[in-house]
Length: 121
Image (cartoon, rainbow, N blue to C red):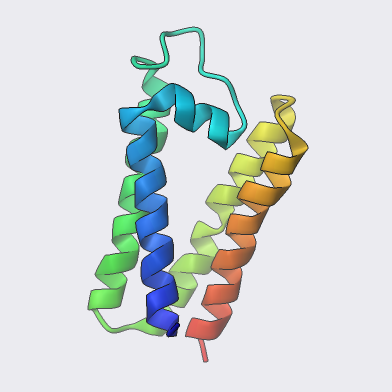
């Protein structure tokens, strides 16, 4: 798999996760490692905000890929890796599952940083 294919896969994955938060917020929140807020999961505005943020983050990957600038995409990946790192911290602070905090969010950050390294070569 080429470095651009890996980047595209990551962008599609992030956008799909965001769509999950917009379309099925309770299920997505559980996968994230938190429970839905006091609002009904379908109307919890914070879950919708996270969904939109993730969709936009994934689309940015495609914009940068279309521009043919792998080094700029690499820099974006490094900076954007702060999002899953922050997400993992949120899960831990909310007494969510450590496996999710480290496995899902830590793994996502590690994948983003690894792709950034490959793209910067």
